[in-house]
Image (cartoon, rainbow, N blue to C red; front, side):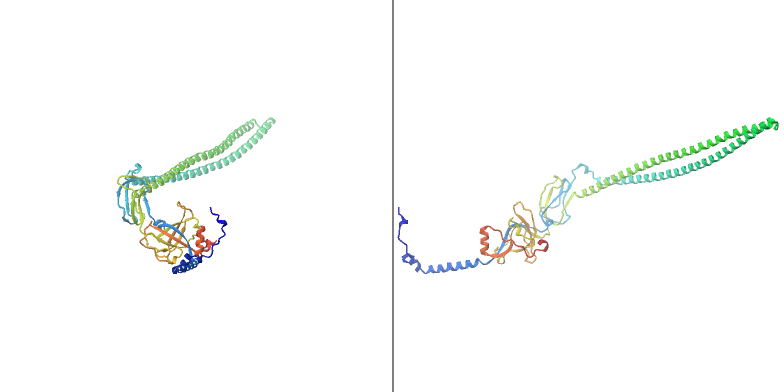
Length: 448
């Protein structure tokens, strides 16, 4: 084995070797060196050329408004398919009949269901009117009872006044009789004394005794009259209480009947409202047997088929594509690029099947791209792990092709800052995101 480390021989200049001299003397060697130098110079200069940072995305063509996108027509009620009025590819106007279904629920089999329900509602309304008349009649009856009660009480009050006056009269008469009795006793005693003295005959004594007995009899009769007057006063007071209780009972019974009639009236009104609600529901249900187009468009695909097939409520029947729509593009960007997207930004779009030459860093040199503008940003990540961006045509740019169909593929480029190419290469090699920036068109509300 050679010990190369111990070799003291030195290698001199390469020009002393013949092979190197032959290579140096060839003319194309100098030309190649010049080419390499020129190319290197151009590459060095190109590294300082401006490059537009961008965010690329992939998506598809859609519509700008939700009501312009393809939709399915569903049945509101369950039924049986009876007749088709359209086929796939037909153009339908808004309100055109697509399908006719028949009823399969037994509670709606009656062909006169609407008329019968209407008649029930009319009958219940008449019942409400009858209860209203009964309530009014009972109200009149209550007023009559109250008026009669007032008159009876006034009559009883008059009797009380008469009884009080009679009591006063009888009491005065009683006092007068008592005075007469006292006088008769005095006269009888005087006549008796004078008779004993022989000054008065016995006939005068007998006469005075007769007057005394007559006065005693009158006072008893007068006391009876006085007590009778008091009893009449008490009876009149009792009569007032009886009249009050009697007419209160009559009035309470009439009011109870009135409240019962009112309760029946309100209950019947509730039944009328329920029947009218059912009537409206039945009328609307009859119109749901014919399934109609919600808007003008084309029938894309029939999702149900056959005649006599039962379908449930909410079952999709056909899909329809609106005839008038505003085209847009939905694209998806990576989460790392999502903070750089702002509403109102300019976007370049090119479509599948459309001739295109794209220079992502030099958008002015691209061919076949169209201008767009961000109109909506979805702030929740989609199922594919990216964020959805909705792009509308830029009115200041050339219009998008009319031949585009909904669902065709599209690719987008969001233009950001202008940087040198060497900076973009350095950023890409290190895996850094594009420079974060704030667009000049941002409004004051976004700044806040």
